[in-house]
Image (cartoon, rainbow, N blue to C red):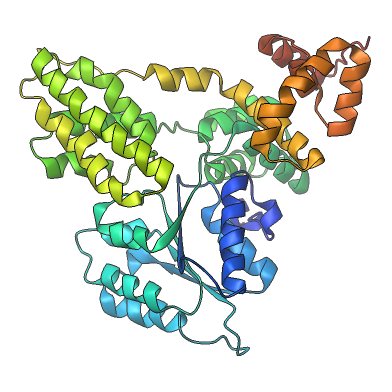
Length: 428
């Protein structure tokens, strides 16, 4: 049977994990606190969309540092006895080598919060309090109220969707190792389609490359469509038509979208869905209060405030609308998200430059972006020779140098496509 590429090319070392560098560093620091015997939190909760490297990071760290990783899928072990026998015993026992170098990996921990939970959550809480080894939990959506006590006991580490640049780079590496010739346009299309989910992109690449030595744009026709916007539309439909607080809150269960994005969708669509001004005023009032909780939660890392923000932005909005619009009113794509998508390529380019500057000058990416990139713009735009010197020193791509030199992004992209087609830019 053909091996799945997502497993074949799963990272073996932490350095091979794609993207989310700050989150990766947070996890490393937490593991080192265990290794020095002084962890502030005995558990870590890695959360974010599917396919962004949460589980892969844990497995890579365990492989690289000699840990025995005990994997448990929480959605399959909801009851108390199973949780105690599998996770509880592993958190106390030594390994076969007589050491405590073990990591308990509880995947899909949000799956344990279903209505059929039979004591699994309470057992997991006690296990975290008593554990002698690191416990890492993984979730797509950790904001279910029933997970509140788990969140309070854990270091929360957020993973975001991967950039198209990161996904294309990984797909290109897989093609090289498989001896597969793949059109660059195909890689870009797969990265766009994946919407930040590397696992989906790798699966799609393997699906269209099966039995081939060369993949062309025509091969993309074999793939169906994947659209997470449909998930949000369904959640909005539930929220704006719910008759109770409970049913409105349920709209977020299983939604693979971060909370700030959901808030933006609700905020932008409220004026369209709630047409009576007095009802809209009530909805905007509860959204404003939810926004205050979300901002404070993010700023102060007080995750317990989620218990107030989520009911307000879902149930509060639902109960504000007492009259339905005349006829169907379609949902609108938020202007903020549309703008962010439009400028995503430019932001990814800037982030790539900042990472290279940070690595060369031993700075954080934030400081590199804020303090160094403006100077690099001046240097790169002053002369071709200076631009070439910067490119060599910082290992910048031609596209990055042209962008720093002030060339419009559309022209940069066109020149980049020309180089891929075999044309070389003239050098002054």
